[in-house]
Length: 165
Image: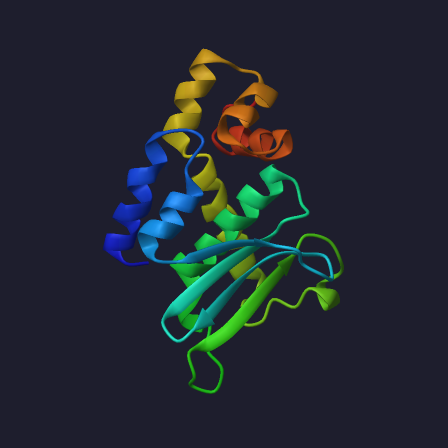
């Protein structure tokens, strides 16, 4: 992750809900909401030096937000792995459901997926903002609504930050 990209993302983490579309725009990443087959939740595609993130338009808005942040994390952390035979062109699709055999991580490993999930949570639920909002309200459902995430995602984030209710 380049320092300039980190500062671009960081600037957008001061207000909930975090404006993911603005981050994509700031980074020059195309963002799409598409009808996806085969249970896909989202994808990141590299074509030369250009990237496109797509999320499944049929999924809930909270799922779309987390998936978009997950694909953004792949861009920030793992985009150099996205090449085939020396060409800078590849696509990675993430599926929410299914067995590992039906959800190949290539070119990413399971560890890359865990890293992307962690960074996605940090992007859509920045620790300083979560702590600030938690001081005002300890209801996970209301906090989730403020951040545009699912209650389950917020509960996990609260536990991770030691703010479990």
